[in-house]
Length: 63
Image (cartoon, rainbow, N blue to C red; front, side, top):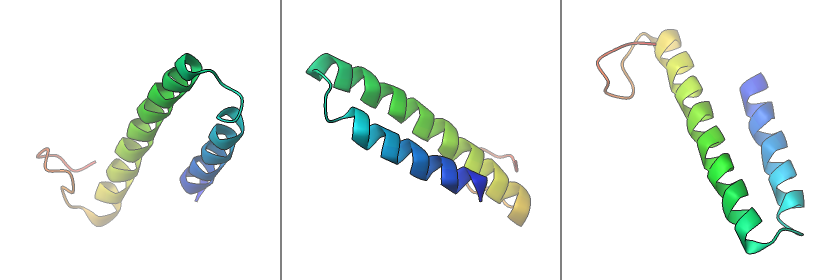
């Protein structure tokens, strides 16, 4: 449940930052958010693979 809470908090933080940033700052922030989203997704897929014992992302490994 902590993983989903982190996603919600990050979304709220991003909404607040987005209101006052310049275009360059917004691009930098969006790139960082994309990186964090990918890391979170990877973690989530790994957890689901271990829980269900199946290769969900097609990389030939479980977990």
